[in-house]
Figure 1 (spheres, rainbow, N blue to C red):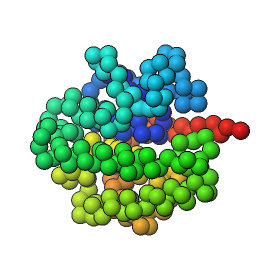
Figure 2: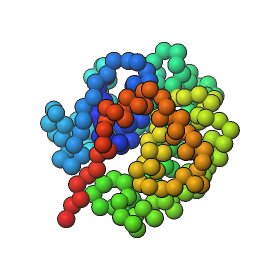
Figure 3: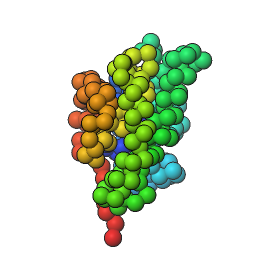
Length: 211
C-alpha cells in the first residue's frame, strides 16, 4: 500500500494505523501548495485535490480519511482496529469515524483562514473554537471513564481523534475544558507507532499564505 500524505494533516490518522498494523507500506509526500508529488500532478491521482489518498495493493485509489481507516483496519488480522462487520463494536467504530469526520474534522477548517486549512488568524481561531467547543465537550465526556473510544482499547477512530487533539495543541487552544481529551492525547503520544509517525512526518505542513 502507498499512502499519500501531508505532514500534520488528517492523513496522519491512516499513517498511524499503518504503523500500528505492522503491514508493509510506503509514503508519498504531497505538496499541497503546488498539488504535486514525486510522481507529478496530484490532481491526476486524486481529483479532490486533498489528502489522504491510499493506493491499495490492487492498484486502486481510495480517498476520504474515514474510509481509508476502515480499509486499513480490515486488512489486518486479529487486532480489531475495525471490528467484524455487523458487530456492535463495528457500528460504534463507524459512528465515531463519521462523527470525527463531519463534526470535528470539517469544523476545524475555517472559511476565514489565510492559506492554511486550519484557522490562522485571531478571528478564524475564535470562530473555529466556538464552533467545535460543544463537539469537543461531547467527546471529552465520553472519555471520562475510558482511555479509548470503543471497548476501551485502541482502534481506528482513536487514530483519527488524535489528529484532532494534535490540532488543538497546534492552534494553542487550552485543554482546561477538555481534561479527558488531554489525557487521551498524552496516552496516544506514549504509543511507539505514534512516536514514529511524528518523527517521520516532522514539522506540520502549512499552505503558503497568498497575497
